[in-house]
Length: 184
Image (cartoon, rainbow, N blue to C red):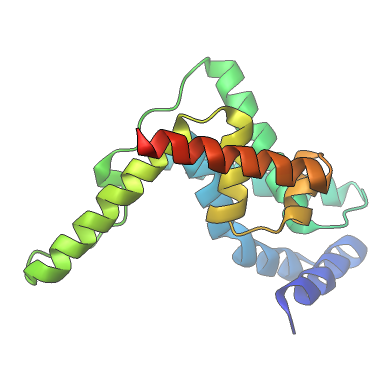
């Protein structure tokens, strides 16, 4: 069964029967994606964990109120997006730069070749993340959703509330701007 089909079945069970096991399965399916999406925007583990748990709680409450949901992932990303905006509004904070220590763990110095390769990959990832953070918010969002969360243009359209063509145009402009930033 495809992920999309399984999501629809689980969502049906959740909406019709308030099935907690279906919610748990959907949680397992999306927790890493939503956490990554939030973490990329806030750059702090504790804050990302708090917002991620808030996202799933709000999703549960929204569905419990018998509101119609066509796409669980779309609902989660919309809630996450709004939670991040709310967090920045309430705290009037700017995202802290991503620390090297917050990137993937487990680098072992034993094998020098692999270590150099991993550090090079981490430094390149850090450089790309910093370049993405220089983009305006609208561009950051579409690039993150498309290339980090690997969502389709249709899914991004649903999350952002923009048409598919507008998403494609924004994505194209964001990539051009990102190329310009990385060349500098």
